[in-house]
Length: 245
Length: 245
DNA sequence: CGCGTTCCTGTGAATTTCCTGAGAAAGGGC
DNA sequence: GCCCTTTCTCAGGAAATTCACAGGAACGCG
Picture 1 (cartoon, rainbow over the protein chains, first blue to last red):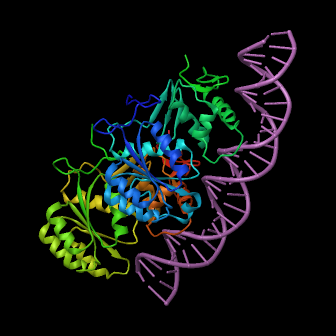
Picture 2 (picture 1 turned 30 degrees about the vertical axis):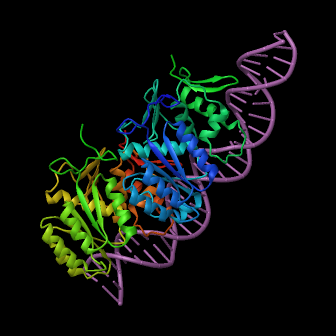
Protein backbone atom coordinates (compact mmCIF):
# COMPACT_ATOMS: atom_id res chain seq x y z
CA UNK A 1 0.00 0.00 0.00
CA UNK A 2 1.50 3.26 -1.07
CA UNK A 3 1.15 6.51 0.76
CA UNK A 4 -0.20 8.42 -2.18
CA UNK A 5 -3.82 9.26 -1.79
CA UNK A 6 -6.30 7.29 -3.82
CA UNK A 7 -7.05 10.35 -5.84
CA UNK A 8 -3.40 10.98 -6.53
CA UNK A 9 -3.34 14.58 -5.39
CA UNK A 10 -0.64 16.13 -3.32
CA UNK A 11 -1.42 15.32 0.22
CA UNK A 12 -1.04 17.09 3.43
CA UNK A 13 1.58 15.21 5.39
CA UNK A 14 2.91 15.52 8.86
CA UNK A 15 6.49 16.65 9.47
CA UNK A 16 7.65 13.04 9.80
CA UNK A 17 6.12 12.13 6.46
CA UNK A 18 3.27 10.09 7.85
CA UNK A 19 -0.36 10.66 7.11
CA UNK A 20 -2.38 13.35 8.80
CA UNK A 21 -4.51 12.02 11.63
CA UNK A 22 -8.10 13.03 12.17
CA UNK A 23 -10.35 12.20 15.09
CA UNK A 24 -14.08 12.12 14.40
CA UNK A 25 -16.34 12.57 17.43
CA UNK A 26 -20.01 11.97 16.69
CA UNK A 27 -22.66 9.80 18.25
CA UNK A 28 -24.61 9.25 15.07
CA UNK A 29 -22.99 6.13 13.70
CA UNK A 30 -24.16 6.78 10.17
CA UNK A 31 -22.63 10.22 10.04
CA UNK A 32 -19.47 9.02 11.66
CA UNK A 33 -19.17 6.30 9.04
CA UNK A 34 -19.77 8.68 6.20
CA UNK A 35 -17.12 11.07 7.44
CA UNK A 36 -14.58 8.38 8.19
CA UNK A 37 -14.88 6.93 4.72
CA UNK A 38 -14.54 10.28 3.04
CA UNK A 39 -11.53 11.22 5.13
CA UNK A 40 -9.78 7.91 4.63
CA UNK A 41 -10.31 8.38 0.95
CA UNK A 42 -8.44 11.67 1.28
CA UNK A 43 -5.49 9.67 2.45
CA UNK A 44 -5.83 10.55 6.10
CA UNK A 45 -5.72 8.28 9.08
CA UNK A 46 -9.01 8.31 10.92
CA UNK A 47 -10.16 7.28 14.36
CA UNK A 48 -13.68 7.84 15.60
CA UNK A 49 -15.37 8.12 18.96
CA UNK A 50 -19.06 8.04 19.78
CA UNK A 51 -19.02 9.84 23.10
CA UNK A 52 -17.02 12.29 25.14
CA UNK A 53 -15.16 9.73 27.19
CA UNK A 54 -14.05 7.86 24.11
CA UNK A 55 -13.03 11.09 22.50
CA UNK A 56 -10.72 12.01 25.35
CA UNK A 57 -9.22 8.54 25.38
CA UNK A 58 -8.68 8.62 21.63
CA UNK A 59 -7.15 12.06 21.85
CA UNK A 60 -4.62 10.82 24.34
CA UNK A 61 -3.63 7.70 22.42
CA UNK A 62 -4.09 8.71 18.85
CA UNK A 63 -2.74 12.28 19.03
CA UNK A 64 -4.72 13.53 16.05
CA UNK A 65 -3.73 16.56 13.98
CA UNK A 66 -7.32 17.71 13.74
CA UNK A 67 -10.67 16.90 15.30
CA UNK A 68 -14.18 16.86 13.90
CA UNK A 69 -16.58 17.37 16.79
CA UNK A 70 -20.34 17.17 16.82
CA UNK A 71 -21.33 19.58 19.54
CA UNK A 72 -24.40 17.65 20.60
CA UNK A 73 -23.29 14.47 22.22
CA UNK A 74 -25.16 12.18 24.60
CA UNK A 75 -23.03 11.88 27.71
CA UNK A 76 -21.35 15.26 27.98
CA UNK A 77 -22.36 18.20 26.03
CA UNK A 78 -20.01 19.09 23.24
CA UNK A 79 -18.55 22.07 25.00
CA UNK A 80 -17.40 19.98 27.94
CA UNK A 81 -15.80 17.55 25.54
CA UNK A 82 -14.14 20.44 23.83
CA UNK A 83 -12.64 21.60 27.08
CA UNK A 84 -11.21 18.21 27.88
CA UNK A 85 -9.96 17.75 24.34
CA UNK A 86 -8.23 21.08 24.54
CA UNK A 87 -6.43 20.02 27.65
CA UNK A 88 -5.11 16.97 25.82
CA UNK A 89 -4.49 18.70 22.52
CA UNK A 90 -3.96 22.40 23.05
CA UNK A 91 -3.01 23.31 19.52
CA UNK A 92 -5.16 21.01 17.48
CA UNK A 93 -7.74 22.67 15.25
CA UNK A 94 -11.34 21.61 15.62
CA UNK A 95 -14.05 21.48 13.00
CA UNK A 96 -17.44 21.67 14.67
CA UNK A 97 -20.57 20.08 13.35
CA UNK A 98 -23.70 21.92 14.36
CA UNK A 99 -27.34 22.17 13.49
CA UNK A 100 -28.17 25.12 11.35
CA UNK A 101 -30.43 26.84 13.83
CA UNK A 102 -27.87 26.43 16.60
CA UNK A 103 -25.72 28.96 14.86
CA UNK A 104 -28.37 31.58 15.17
CA UNK A 105 -28.66 30.79 18.87
CA UNK A 106 -24.99 31.46 18.85
CA UNK A 107 -22.23 29.26 20.08
CA UNK A 108 -19.97 32.05 21.17
CA UNK A 109 -16.32 31.88 20.43
CA UNK A 110 -16.31 28.51 18.74
CA UNK A 111 -14.44 29.68 15.71
CA UNK A 112 -12.38 32.14 17.69
CA UNK A 113 -9.14 30.24 17.74
CA UNK A 114 -9.00 29.64 14.06
CA UNK A 115 -11.35 26.73 14.40
CA UNK A 116 -14.19 26.40 12.01
CA UNK A 117 -17.61 24.88 11.82
CA UNK A 118 -19.98 23.32 9.35
CA UNK A 119 -23.74 23.18 9.71
CA UNK A 120 -25.76 20.04 9.29
CA UNK A 121 -26.68 18.82 6.82
CA UNK A 122 -23.32 19.33 5.18
CA UNK A 123 -21.69 18.15 1.99
CA UNK A 124 -18.54 16.08 2.17
CA UNK A 125 -16.82 18.48 -0.14
CA UNK A 126 -17.41 21.21 2.36
CA UNK A 127 -16.17 19.22 5.33
CA UNK A 128 -13.05 18.07 3.56
CA UNK A 129 -12.30 21.54 2.26
CA UNK A 130 -12.74 23.14 5.65
CA UNK A 131 -10.65 20.49 7.30
CA UNK A 132 -7.87 20.89 4.79
CA UNK A 133 -7.97 24.61 5.38
CA UNK A 134 -7.72 24.15 9.12
CA UNK A 135 -4.83 21.75 8.87
CA UNK A 136 -3.08 23.85 6.30
CA UNK A 137 -3.27 26.90 8.52
CA UNK A 138 -2.51 25.11 11.77
CA UNK A 139 1.04 24.43 10.71
CA UNK A 140 0.78 20.90 12.02
CA UNK A 141 1.27 19.50 8.56
CA UNK A 142 4.41 20.08 6.57
CA UNK A 143 2.83 20.90 3.32
CA UNK A 144 1.97 24.53 3.34
CA UNK A 145 -0.09 23.68 0.34
CA UNK A 146 -1.38 26.54 -1.67
CA UNK A 147 -4.98 27.50 -1.49
CA UNK A 148 -4.90 27.81 -5.26
CA UNK A 149 -6.13 25.06 -7.54
CA UNK A 150 -4.93 25.28 -11.13
CA UNK A 151 -6.04 23.31 -14.17
CA UNK A 152 -4.77 24.73 -17.43
CA UNK A 153 -5.64 28.41 -17.53
CA UNK A 154 -8.37 27.92 -14.96
CA UNK A 155 -7.69 28.83 -11.35
CA UNK A 156 -9.74 28.56 -8.18
CA UNK A 157 -8.69 30.15 -4.91
CA UNK A 158 -10.11 28.39 -1.90
CA UNK A 159 -9.41 31.34 0.40
CA UNK A 160 -10.85 34.18 -1.60
CA UNK A 161 -13.27 32.03 -3.60
CA UNK A 162 -11.99 33.76 -6.71
CA UNK A 163 -12.21 31.83 -9.95
CA UNK A 164 -10.50 32.94 -13.14
CA UNK A 165 -10.16 31.58 -16.62
CA UNK A 166 -7.35 32.98 -18.70
CA UNK A 167 -7.01 35.77 -16.17
CA UNK A 168 -10.63 36.81 -16.38
CA UNK A 169 -12.66 36.73 -13.21
CA UNK A 170 -15.70 34.49 -13.18
CA UNK A 171 -18.55 34.75 -10.72
CA UNK A 172 -19.85 31.45 -9.37
CA UNK A 173 -22.63 30.69 -6.93
CA UNK A 174 -21.85 28.64 -3.83
CA UNK A 175 -22.96 25.36 -5.37
CA UNK A 176 -21.20 26.01 -8.64
CA UNK A 177 -18.07 26.79 -6.67
CA UNK A 178 -18.17 23.54 -4.76
CA UNK A 179 -18.81 21.52 -7.87
CA UNK A 180 -15.93 23.14 -9.69
CA UNK A 181 -13.64 22.67 -6.72
CA UNK A 182 -14.46 18.98 -6.67
CA UNK A 183 -13.78 18.64 -10.37
CA UNK A 184 -10.54 20.59 -10.13
CA UNK A 185 -9.30 18.56 -7.24
CA UNK A 186 -9.72 15.52 -9.47
CA UNK A 187 -8.50 16.66 -12.86
CA UNK A 188 -8.48 14.24 -15.78
CA UNK A 189 -10.57 11.85 -13.77
CA UNK A 190 -14.09 10.79 -14.59
CA UNK A 191 -16.51 11.49 -11.77
CA UNK A 192 -19.91 9.87 -11.95
CA UNK A 193 -23.04 11.81 -11.29
CA UNK A 194 -23.63 9.68 -8.21
CA UNK A 195 -20.18 10.51 -6.89
CA UNK A 196 -20.69 14.17 -7.51
CA UNK A 197 -24.09 14.13 -5.86
CA UNK A 198 -22.68 12.35 -2.81
CA UNK A 199 -19.80 14.70 -2.53
CA UNK A 200 -21.06 18.14 -3.46
CA UNK A 201 -24.65 18.00 -2.29
CA UNK A 202 -25.50 17.56 1.36
CA UNK A 203 -26.10 14.05 2.59
CA UNK A 204 -29.82 14.54 3.03
CA UNK A 205 -30.44 15.91 -0.42
CA UNK A 206 -33.60 14.27 -1.67
CA UNK A 207 -34.03 15.85 -5.05
CA UNK A 208 -33.64 14.78 -8.63
CA UNK A 209 -30.27 13.47 -9.70
CA UNK A 210 -30.26 15.70 -12.72
CA UNK A 211 -29.28 18.73 -10.69
CA UNK A 212 -25.77 17.62 -11.47
CA UNK A 213 -26.43 17.93 -15.19
CA UNK A 214 -27.99 21.28 -14.56
CA UNK A 215 -25.02 22.60 -12.64
CA UNK A 216 -22.55 21.19 -15.12
CA UNK A 217 -24.49 23.13 -17.68
CA UNK A 218 -24.21 26.29 -15.58
CA UNK A 219 -20.49 25.80 -15.16
CA UNK A 220 -19.92 25.29 -18.86
CA UNK A 221 -21.76 28.45 -19.65
CA UNK A 222 -19.51 30.38 -17.31
CA UNK A 223 -16.21 28.60 -17.76
CA UNK A 224 -16.14 27.13 -21.22
CA UNK A 225 -18.14 29.84 -22.95
CA UNK A 226 -16.47 30.50 -26.28
CA UNK A 227 -13.16 29.04 -25.16
CA UNK A 228 -11.94 25.53 -25.72
CA UNK A 229 -13.96 23.30 -23.43
CA UNK A 230 -12.42 21.94 -20.24
CA UNK A 231 -15.45 20.15 -18.86
CA UNK A 232 -16.11 16.97 -20.78
CA UNK A 233 -18.93 14.46 -20.72
CA UNK A 234 -18.19 10.76 -20.75
CA UNK A 235 -21.52 9.40 -21.80
CA UNK A 236 -22.73 6.73 -19.45
CA UNK A 237 -19.84 7.35 -17.07
CA UNK A 238 -19.73 10.91 -15.84
CA UNK A 239 -17.80 14.13 -16.23
CA UNK A 240 -14.20 15.21 -16.05
CA UNK A 241 -12.21 18.37 -16.22
CA UNK A 242 -8.89 18.75 -18.00
CA UNK A 243 -6.92 21.55 -19.61
CA UNK A 244 -8.11 22.53 -23.04
CA UNK A 245 -5.58 21.98 -25.82
CA UNK B 1 10.98 33.41 3.34
CA UNK B 2 9.63 35.41 6.21
CA UNK B 3 7.96 33.69 9.05
CA UNK B 4 4.26 34.01 8.86
CA UNK B 5 1.49 33.27 11.25
CA UNK B 6 -1.16 30.71 10.48
CA UNK B 7 -3.18 33.42 8.84
CA UNK B 8 -0.23 34.57 6.84
CA UNK B 9 0.30 37.85 8.60
CA UNK B 10 3.66 38.99 9.78
CA UNK B 11 4.26 37.96 13.32
CA UNK B 12 5.82 39.46 16.31
CA UNK B 13 8.89 37.45 17.18
CA UNK B 14 11.38 37.55 19.99
CA UNK B 15 14.97 38.61 19.33
CA UNK B 16 16.06 34.99 19.19
CA UNK B 17 13.46 34.23 16.56
CA UNK B 18 11.21 32.13 18.76
CA UNK B 19 7.55 32.78 19.34
CA UNK B 20 6.35 35.42 21.75
CA UNK B 21 5.22 33.98 25.07
CA UNK B 22 2.06 35.06 26.79
CA UNK B 23 0.82 34.10 30.23
CA UNK B 24 -2.94 34.16 30.78
CA UNK B 25 -4.09 34.48 34.38
CA UNK B 26 -7.81 34.02 34.82
CA UNK B 27 -9.93 31.83 37.05
CA UNK B 28 -12.81 31.49 34.64
CA UNK B 29 -11.84 28.42 32.66
CA UNK B 30 -14.04 29.29 29.72
CA UNK B 31 -12.51 32.70 29.31
CA UNK B 32 -9.05 31.33 29.73
CA UNK B 33 -9.78 28.78 27.02
CA UNK B 34 -11.12 31.36 24.67
CA UNK B 35 -8.10 33.59 25.12
CA UNK B 36 -5.60 30.79 24.84
CA UNK B 37 -7.12 29.62 21.60
CA UNK B 38 -7.13 33.04 20.09
CA UNK B 39 -3.57 33.78 21.13
CA UNK B 40 -2.21 30.48 19.93
CA UNK B 41 -3.83 31.18 16.64
CA UNK B 42 -1.85 34.41 16.50
CA UNK B 43 1.22 32.26 16.56
CA UNK B 44 2.11 32.90 20.16
CA UNK B 45 3.08 30.44 22.85
CA UNK B 46 0.57 30.43 25.66
CA UNK B 47 0.54 29.24 29.23
CA UNK B 48 -2.38 29.77 31.53
CA UNK B 49 -2.89 29.88 35.27
CA UNK B 50 -6.14 29.83 37.22
CA UNK B 51 -4.97 31.44 40.43
CA UNK B 52 -2.32 33.68 41.84
CA UNK B 53 -0.03 30.92 43.04
CA UNK B 54 -0.05 29.24 39.67
CA UNK B 55 0.57 32.55 38.01
CA UNK B 56 3.71 33.22 40.03
CA UNK B 57 4.98 29.74 39.40
CA UNK B 58 4.31 30.04 35.67
CA UNK B 59 5.98 33.42 35.57
CA UNK B 60 9.13 31.98 37.06
CA UNK B 61 9.30 28.97 34.76
CA UNK B 62 7.78 30.23 31.57
CA UNK B 63 9.30 33.74 31.51
CA UNK B 64 6.53 35.23 29.39
CA UNK B 65 6.94 38.35 27.26
CA UNK B 66 3.52 39.59 28.28
CA UNK B 67 0.81 38.77 30.78
CA UNK B 68 -2.95 38.93 30.58
CA UNK B 69 -4.26 39.32 34.11
CA UNK B 70 -7.82 39.22 35.33
CA UNK B 71 -7.75 41.46 38.38
CA UNK B 72 -10.42 39.57 40.25
CA UNK B 73 -9.00 36.28 41.30
CA UNK B 74 -10.18 33.95 44.05
CA UNK B 75 -7.20 33.37 46.31
CA UNK B 76 -5.42 36.69 46.18
CA UNK B 77 -6.85 39.73 44.68
CA UNK B 78 -5.36 40.72 41.39
CA UNK B 79 -3.31 43.52 42.82
CA UNK B 80 -1.40 41.19 45.09
CA UNK B 81 -0.75 38.87 42.16
CA UNK B 82 0.42 41.80 40.17
CA UNK B 83 2.94 42.71 42.83
CA UNK B 84 4.38 39.26 42.95
CA UNK B 85 4.42 38.99 39.18
CA UNK B 86 6.28 42.25 38.99
CA UNK B 87 8.94 40.91 41.30
CA UNK B 88 9.44 37.98 38.95
CA UNK B 89 9.04 39.92 35.74
CA UNK B 90 9.90 43.56 36.30
CA UNK B 91 9.65 44.76 32.74
CA UNK B 92 6.92 42.61 31.30
CA UNK B 93 3.85 44.46 30.06
CA UNK B 94 0.51 43.46 31.53
CA UNK B 95 -2.90 43.58 29.94
CA UNK B 96 -5.56 43.80 32.64
CA UNK B 97 -9.00 42.34 32.32
CA UNK B 98 -11.50 44.24 34.37
CA UNK B 99 -15.21 44.61 34.83
CA UNK B 100 -16.66 47.63 33.18
CA UNK B 101 -17.67 49.33 36.42
CA UNK B 102 -14.28 48.85 38.07
CA UNK B 103 -12.94 51.94 39.73
CA UNK B 104 -11.51 54.10 37.02
CA UNK B 105 -8.68 55.77 38.87
CA UNK B 106 -7.37 52.51 40.20
CA UNK B 107 -7.04 51.23 36.69
CA UNK B 108 -5.45 54.45 35.64
CA UNK B 109 -2.80 53.93 38.29
CA UNK B 110 -2.22 50.39 37.20
CA UNK B 111 -1.71 51.15 33.59
CA UNK B 112 0.65 54.02 34.25
CA UNK B 113 3.72 51.98 33.44
CA UNK B 114 2.88 51.32 29.84
CA UNK B 115 0.45 48.58 30.67
CA UNK B 116 -3.04 48.52 29.26
CA UNK B 117 -6.45 47.18 30.11
CA UNK B 118 -9.58 45.85 28.50
CA UNK B 119 -13.02 45.75 30.06
CA UNK B 120 -15.20 42.68 30.16
CA UNK B 121 -16.95 41.59 28.11
CA UNK B 122 -14.33 42.10 25.43
CA UNK B 123 -13.92 41.04 21.85
CA UNK B 124 -10.99 38.89 20.86
CA UNK B 125 -10.06 41.37 18.20
CA UNK B 126 -9.63 43.99 20.89
CA UNK B 127 -7.57 41.83 23.24
CA UNK B 128 -5.28 40.63 20.52
CA UNK B 129 -4.79 44.13 19.18
CA UNK B 130 -4.03 45.57 22.60
CA UNK B 131 -1.63 42.79 23.37
CA UNK B 132 0.16 43.23 20.09
CA UNK B 133 0.50 46.90 20.85
CA UNK B 134 1.92 46.23 24.30
CA UNK B 135 4.44 43.72 23.03
CA UNK B 136 5.43 45.85 20.12
CA UNK B 137 6.08 48.83 22.39
CA UNK B 138 7.77 46.85 25.13
CA UNK B 139 10.75 46.15 22.94
CA UNK B 140 10.81 42.56 24.07
CA UNK B 141 9.96 41.40 20.63
CA UNK B 142 11.66 42.27 17.43
CA UNK B 143 9.41 44.77 15.86
CA UNK B 144 8.67 43.23 12.59
CA UNK B 145 5.24 44.67 12.28
CA UNK B 146 4.05 48.13 11.59
CA UNK B 147 0.97 49.38 13.29
CA UNK B 148 -0.28 50.36 9.85
CA UNK B 149 -2.48 48.05 7.88
CA UNK B 150 -2.70 48.77 4.17
CA UNK B 151 -5.02 47.30 1.58
CA UNK B 152 -4.95 49.11 -1.71
CA UNK B 153 -5.48 52.79 -1.05
CA UNK B 154 -7.09 52.04 2.28
CA UNK B 155 -5.02 52.40 5.43
CA UNK B 156 -5.77 51.72 9.06
CA UNK B 157 -3.46 52.69 11.89
CA UNK B 158 -3.85 50.40 14.85
CA UNK B 159 -2.18 52.86 17.19
CA UNK B 160 -3.88 56.09 16.29
CA UNK B 161 -7.04 54.46 14.97
CA UNK B 162 -6.81 56.66 11.91
CA UNK B 163 -8.43 55.31 8.81
CA UNK B 164 -7.95 56.80 5.37
CA UNK B 165 -9.04 55.96 1.89
CA UNK B 166 -7.09 57.54 -0.91
CA UNK B 167 -5.59 59.93 1.62
CA UNK B 168 -8.92 61.14 2.93
CA UNK B 169 -9.63 60.64 6.60
CA UNK B 170 -12.64 58.55 7.52
CA UNK B 171 -14.36 58.55 10.86
CA UNK B 172 -15.39 55.13 12.14
CA UNK B 173 -17.15 54.10 15.31
CA UNK B 174 -15.46 51.60 17.61
CA UNK B 175 -17.30 48.61 16.21
CA UNK B 176 -16.83 49.66 12.63
CA UNK B 177 -13.14 50.07 13.33
CA UNK B 178 -12.76 46.60 14.78
CA UNK B 179 -14.66 45.03 11.95
CA UNK B 180 -12.53 46.79 9.38
CA UNK B 181 -9.36 45.85 11.22
CA UNK B 182 -10.36 42.20 11.20
CA UNK B 183 -11.11 42.32 7.51
CA UNK B 184 -7.87 44.12 6.75
CA UNK B 185 -5.81 41.70 8.76
CA UNK B 186 -7.23 38.98 6.54
CA UNK B 187 -7.27 40.52 3.10
CA UNK B 188 -8.46 38.49 0.12
CA UNK B 189 -9.86 35.92 2.42
CA UNK B 190 -13.51 35.05 2.82
CA UNK B 191 -14.62 35.46 6.43
CA UNK B 192 -17.94 33.98 7.41
CA UNK B 193 -20.45 35.90 9.43
CA UNK B 194 -19.95 33.48 12.30
CA UNK B 195 -16.21 34.03 12.26
CA UNK B 196 -16.68 37.76 12.25
CA UNK B 197 -19.18 37.60 15.07
CA UNK B 198 -16.83 35.45 17.15
CA UNK B 199 -13.94 37.71 16.61
CA UNK B 200 -15.28 41.24 16.52
CA UNK B 201 -18.23 41.07 18.90
CA UNK B 202 -17.75 40.33 22.56
CA UNK B 203 -18.00 36.77 23.74
CA UNK B 204 -21.28 37.31 25.53
CA UNK B 205 -23.07 38.91 22.64
CA UNK B 206 -26.40 37.19 22.32
CA UNK B 207 -27.96 39.11 19.53
CA UNK B 208 -28.92 38.54 15.96
CA UNK B 209 -26.26 37.47 13.51
CA UNK B 210 -27.38 40.10 11.10
CA UNK B 211 -25.56 42.85 12.98
CA UNK B 212 -22.66 41.79 10.84
CA UNK B 213 -24.63 42.59 7.71
CA UNK B 214 -25.61 45.87 9.23
CA UNK B 215 -22.07 46.90 10.04
CA UNK B 216 -20.80 45.76 6.68
CA UNK B 217 -23.41 48.05 5.28
CA UNK B 218 -22.15 50.93 7.45
CA UNK B 219 -18.57 50.31 6.42
CA UNK B 220 -19.44 50.26 2.77
CA UNK B 221 -21.19 53.55 3.08
CA UNK B 222 -18.09 55.11 4.59
CA UNK B 223 -15.34 53.30 2.74
CA UNK B 224 -16.66 52.28 -0.62
CA UNK B 225 -18.94 55.26 -1.15
CA UNK B 226 -18.58 56.28 -4.77
CA UNK B 227 -15.20 54.61 -5.14
CA UNK B 228 -14.53 51.15 -6.52
CA UNK B 229 -15.74 48.72 -3.88
CA UNK B 230 -13.24 46.91 -1.68
CA UNK B 231 -15.66 45.04 0.53
CA UNK B 232 -17.21 42.16 -1.33
CA UNK B 233 -20.01 39.75 -0.50
CA UNK B 234 -19.58 36.08 -1.26
CA UNK B 235 -23.15 34.97 -1.08
CA UNK B 236 -23.52 31.90 1.07
CA UNK B 237 -19.93 32.17 2.28
CA UNK B 238 -19.14 35.52 3.87
CA UNK B 239 -17.32 38.75 3.16
CA UNK B 240 -13.83 39.71 2.12
CA UNK B 241 -11.82 42.82 1.54
CA UNK B 242 -9.41 43.33 -1.32
CA UNK B 243 -7.99 46.25 -3.27
CA UNK B 244 -10.30 47.61 -5.90
CA UNK B 245 -8.94 47.42 -9.42
C1' DC C 1 -31.11 4.53 -40.55
C1' DG C 2 -34.20 4.15 -36.67
C1' DC C 3 -34.68 3.78 -31.88
C1' DG C 4 -34.05 4.08 -27.03
C1' DT C 5 -31.21 6.19 -23.83
C1' DT C 6 -28.71 9.81 -22.03
C1' DC C 7 -27.72 14.35 -21.68
C1' DC C 8 -28.59 19.42 -22.25
C1' DT C 9 -30.90 23.56 -21.18
C1' DG C 10 -34.98 27.12 -21.10
C1' DT C 11 -38.55 28.47 -18.07
C1' DG C 12 -40.37 29.67 -13.90
C1' DA C 13 -41.46 29.31 -9.10
C1' DA C 14 -40.04 28.65 -4.33
C1' DT C 15 -36.70 29.65 -1.31
C1' DT C 16 -32.75 31.63 0.67
C1' DT C 17 -29.74 35.33 1.43
C1' DC C 18 -28.63 39.88 1.73
C1' DC C 19 -29.39 44.93 2.19
C1' DT C 20 -31.04 48.88 4.48
C1' DG C 21 -34.41 52.31 6.64
C1' DA C 22 -36.55 53.44 10.92
C1' DG C 23 -36.55 53.69 15.52
C1' DA C 24 -35.74 51.92 20.38
C1' DA C 25 -32.26 51.30 23.79
C1' DA C 26 -27.90 51.90 25.70
C1' DG C 27 -23.72 54.40 26.43
C1' DG C 28 -20.44 58.47 26.83
C1' DG C 29 -19.06 63.13 27.57
C1' DC C 30 -19.74 67.35 29.71
C1' DG D 1 -28.63 64.57 34.53
C1' DC D 2 -28.99 65.93 29.50
C1' DC D 3 -27.79 65.54 24.77
C1' DC D 4 -25.52 63.31 21.15
C1' DT D 5 -23.56 59.22 19.38
C1' DT D 6 -23.47 54.51 18.89
C1' DT D 7 -25.33 49.95 18.97
C1' DC D 8 -28.70 46.88 17.82
C1' DT D 9 -33.54 44.89 16.65
C1' DC D 10 -37.00 44.45 13.47
C1' DA D 11 -39.04 44.06 9.24
C1' DG D 12 -39.85 44.91 4.33
C1' DG D 13 -38.11 44.44 0.01
C1' DA D 14 -34.74 43.31 -3.54
C1' DA D 15 -31.94 40.14 -5.55
C1' DA D 16 -29.66 35.93 -6.16
C1' DT D 17 -29.80 31.06 -5.96
C1' DT D 18 -31.56 26.53 -6.09
C1' DC D 19 -34.26 23.21 -8.12
C1' DA D 20 -38.16 20.72 -10.67
C1' DC D 21 -39.98 19.95 -14.87
C1' DA D 22 -40.12 19.07 -19.59
C1' DG D 23 -39.05 19.29 -24.45
C1' DG D 24 -35.53 18.70 -27.53
C1' DA D 25 -30.70 17.43 -29.01
C1' DA D 26 -27.03 14.22 -29.22
C1' DC D 27 -25.35 9.80 -28.94
C1' DG D 28 -24.55 4.83 -29.54
C1' DC D 29 -26.18 0.54 -30.98
C1' DG D 30 -28.18 -2.84 -33.73
